[in-house]
Amino acid sequence: MQIKDIQTQLGVTADGIWGEKSKQAMRSAMRDGKVIKITENISLNELLASNTASRLGLDNMPDGKVLQNLIDSAIKLFQPAREILGKPIRISSGYRSPKLNAKIGGAKNSAHLYGFAMDFVCPEVGNTKQVLKKLTDGLKAKGIKFDQAIIEYPTSPNSWIHLGYKHPSGTQRGQVFRIG
Ligand SMILES: [Zn+2]
Image 1 (tube, rainbow, N blue to C red):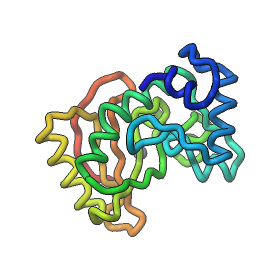
Image 2 (image 1 turned 180 degrees about the vertical axis):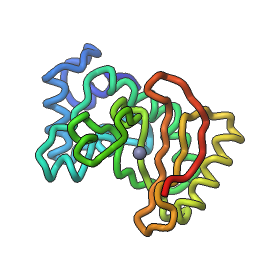
Image 3 (image 1 turned 90 degrees about the vertical axis):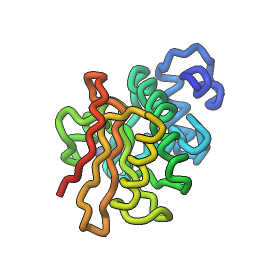
Image 4 (image 1 turned 60 degrees about the horizontal axis):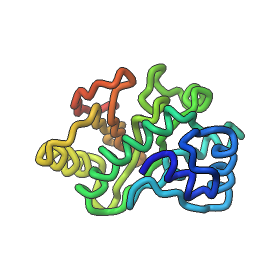
């Protein structure tokens, strides 16, 4: 899966250049509920959707570089993570534009800004503690590299997992910890 394949699904010229026509087609696809797949279980739609962006009317469309990062993250980490868990995941945040990230109070150099991270839950596997355990055991067993796997606010009913493929610098630190 590459940008060209995304463009083919969108019905625009598959030239690999993520320009205004492609972005507009993706905005329409999201409005119309047309699912643009990156991998078997991960769609571009869910990595771009944001309740906050919709509510505030913020555009959350990435540039070509970030889109490529999203594709790489989905193929190399998010899809394998989904397969390790073996149950549907619900993604609450993938890419965040600088404006969106500022609005929600995200970290200044957040991996979400670069298309390298997703926040999710997987209720059919269990709470976020159980999900993190299954996920990190599986990643380790398969030798799959990642940057961060974080439980955010483990005691809250709204707890979620942040899974980062790469640090904005491109490194993969393999960090596992909790916040809150
Ligand atoms: Zn996150």
